[in-house]
Image (tube, rainbow, N blue to C red; front, side):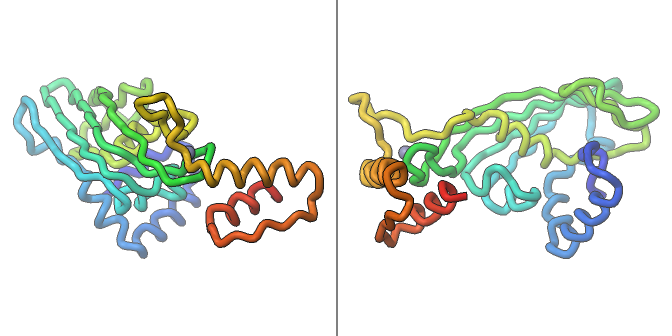
Amino acid sequence: MFEIKNYPILSHKSIFLYFCKVFIEGKVDRLKDYNISYKGLKDGMHKFEYQIGAPFFNLFEEPLVESGTLNAVVTLNKSQKMLVVDFDIKGTVSSICDKCMGPMEIPVESSDRMYFNFGIEYSEQSEEIIVLPYEEHQINVAQWLYEFIIVSLPLRHVHPDDENGNSTCDTQMLEKLDEYLVGDENSSQEQEETNDPRWDALKKLINK
Ligand SMILES: [Zn+2]
C-alpha cells in the first residue's frame, strides 16, 4: 500500500478522492515501482535505479514538471538503528523558456540524503529526518524523487547564452513579443495574425 503519510497537508477526504482517482487511472500499480521493502534487506548498502520521464511525473496531481529524461540512483544503507538513504538524480527536465516561451531542457544534478529512524509512530522530525513505525516494512520514494527534482530547478527558466555570450532564445518570438507589448500599450484593439500556438497561449495569458 502506498504511504498516505507522505501527504500530511491533505485532508482525509481529499486523500480518499485522490486515491480513488489514482486507483482508477492505474497509478497505484505504477507507484508500487517506487516501493523499497527494507525489512527483508540485509544490513549494508543496497542500490535501486529508476529511469524518470513523463510517466513518472504523471503520477502527481498537476505536476510542476511534465516530462524529462533523468536517471535516479537511490542508495539505502540499512542498519539495525536506522536507514540512511541517498538520492542521486541526474538528467534534464523539459520546460518552457520564461523569456521567449520556446521549449527548453533544464539540466538537473542533485544529491540529497534522508534519515529514517524507527519509533512508535510515523513523524517528520525535520525535512531530512523521518521516524517510521516499527511495524512498517517499506518506504515509497516517488514523492522524494519528485521533490528533489523540483527544488533543484532554477526559479527562472531561460535559454542559456551560447559560447559567444549571445542569447539562444527564439529571436523571432521575442520580436513578436516586443511588438505585441508595445502595440498593446498604444491600442488594445490591435490584432496579430499568427499560427504559432505559443503566441496564442501567450496572448491568453496577457489578456487574463
Ligand atoms: Zn528562450
